[in-house]
Length: 330
Image (cartoon, rainbow, N blue to C red; front, side, top):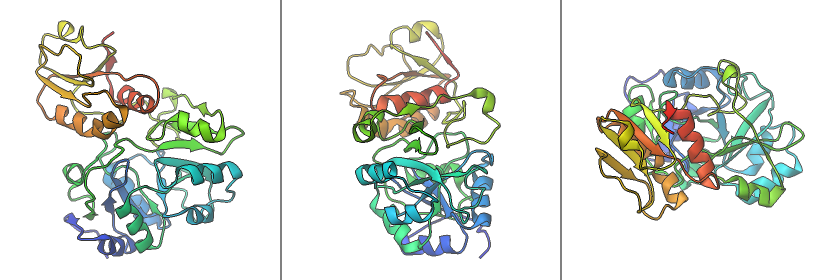
């Protein structure tokens, strides 16, 4: 089947699965963000992911499976620590990087020996994976470097005509991408903070390391997606602050504010989006990318985003803000 000129809305998982088996691209929901799926063992279909997203081939893809047995079948070694993490957090927003078997194309892993695998915690995603009968390579379903999609409408806005089908499963509950942890070395290392906080991982397996970004390696093969210094970015300039008060004084232009909690002085801002009245980080994460899209479409000169407490899901949210931002105000 050849590439379709238009994007269709899939009626159900069996229809989406049939399209995927024919080498087409289908966006599907997970609990984190919408993924742009292709048969992970089909190099031509995988190449179309990079083409559709305009994604550099040095940025690897995560492979989605429906259960732990399928994950084991894709790896040369599935160590005891992986078994513990899978038992505790799958299905869920955790990706494990493990030594890959040869049937996973090098394009999926950017030529690196490790493949990122996860079992998503979304009923429609799991139904799709069981229907399709193959692992699905699936980065976020948006143009490369842009704001990640958390609804089918976001996917259509960014990739209409470049993705063959969209399976609509409603808004994503977690709202930020999975936590990626590498088990390729001597010590478990978080490559990308995400929807599973570090504290919860350490409660199961003990202390883990946190990889640091290296902007000088932005054009080299990345060990995991989401590690480039510039990512998740709106088209409107984004500035970061730790408190709201100085923002209006700094800019004599239209300001959109991304904040949380109910006790901030927001007078003088053109547009204000509050992620959570109670400052609950799970609610903030669930609303994060949709709120950033809303401010990007508001016609303001600059978006000012208040950073989060550097704990729990706040670590992942701050990671996304820093990669999306142009500069700090303070």
